Image (cartoon, rainbow, N blue to C red; front, side, top):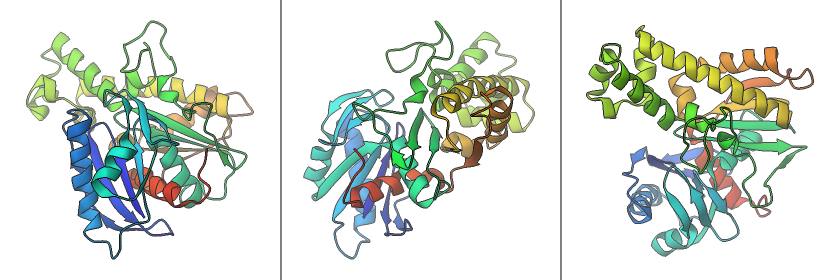
Length: 315
């Protein structure tokens, strides 16, 4: 089965065996976020890098995308960080690659993979939190992957943590993602450097220019002891803790799985999350275990392939 993970800045494809093993990986392809046409061309190139290695065409293709989707039609309803609305992604990919294409939210795909094959295997009540360019989530409750009325349950990145706060890429202000998403960390860092150029010298030297500062720039500078980067990381940890306490209180998971590119870049986020849960959650929720996603950054593509493979897909 072919799994594809389409994010706000990258696309990754993999041929996935029935046990979840990736037998061929396309590598990470960056795209220019230049509208559906250009991004889909990048996706097709990534997919073909895997299909050329397949012994036979896959029976179905699963596509995980950082968006709210309608899995019945394969339409991307809204992808804030891609700037898409109502894009018939399954139809357009099928026209290029053939076969049956199943499109799912990337956080839901990652949760499905971690629950069935990864860190959540054997656990009936799981919340999977994905920290990357955006912030996503998905819940397994009572051994069932929840969907919601319009297949968008778990959009915790867009719950308000600061009243009247920063503008998000969605229609809201003060969202968790607007403070701890990769794009938001970069935005906050760039603003801080413009306000205090002297304090931002190390960040600019590392990135080349203010506009090129990313979350990873901040994390790398933090490791060298840079004061401004350290302040930005501490602020991010505080916002992340605020959001996670609300998530765990609301969903009451036995296990919180945390994954995504930001965790790879800043693994110390995990003990910050666990400390906040122990100290600040309701007693009934404060015992939730916190673990790092076992499948790493490939969880979404593995989950998309598995959901395309499953004869009874979650609805």
